Image 1 (spheres, one colour):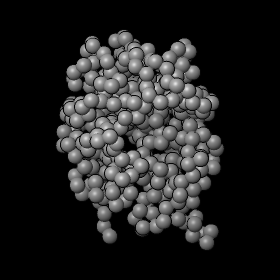
Image 2 (tube, one colour):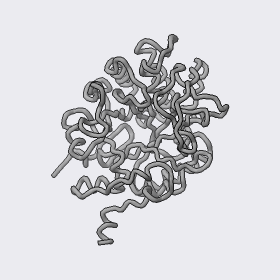
Image 3 (tube, helix red, strand yellow):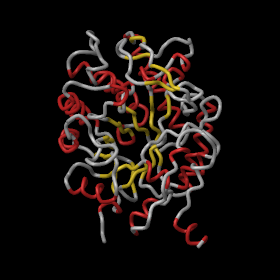
Image 4 (spheres, one colour):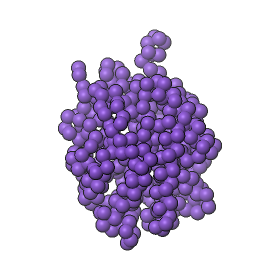
Length: 368
């Protein structure tokens, strides 16, 4: 049966063979120096059947890190590691963009070059527990509030990481503005208590996001730049008193750029990612305000993905865990084949088990 999921779509300069993207998924397997691990080329190339691969979140600077063994894209060694990955994906017929990441207040002093707490819009601690380099958990620290000069330096770090991602052979970049990380912290008033030009009004809280977009677009062009947002996701206690107002404003402010796409996280009802506490469903309104292609993420099955597109909430979708466990997910969705079950014990850290050893349909057939 025909489905829009298997039709091609153009996202700016990116021509996708289908509308099923591989969502960014942290795997915490980077080598020393935050260099992407050697087997990542196999991992990503196995999943090149996706219309687009979005890399695991990749920090833009040393101070942007907040989890163990996550890769960066700001040093020459990191670029060389990623170049092996992008070459492998391209050889397999795929497209891959780098997700540029700064965790803000979710970082710990363990990751900071000066050994002090991380940075955020305001000195307001995240809720929950942070993860040390040895994977142990600890209470979040109260972050240091960024000065205006430091904000300018972080924007410059985004621009530098964008340049390095281009050298690494990526097809474009996605700015990570979701899930309670730095850009999300500026947008949401629960984390942003500033009284200067970066806080208070909708325009002021969106200013940092737009400055980052400006800097990255100058490197890549708008047609190879995207951004990810999560209006109703309260990760790490990063919430807003009126998410509809700030995110509809943000979407409208992004519209003039003509970005390749907006990647929106909005959990589907009755799934593990469903929106909690009565937060509003905004995808359709945000898509209209943005005026460009919207990629939706949030616990999607094939049926829910088709429904989201049919209802006008998305132009394409991204899928995480099912892609992790099924390298040939597109083919499985197309044929209705059974999916591999994910092994959650191998999601983070470790070696090749649970990383590059999930079987494809062809391998299952050969073994039968």
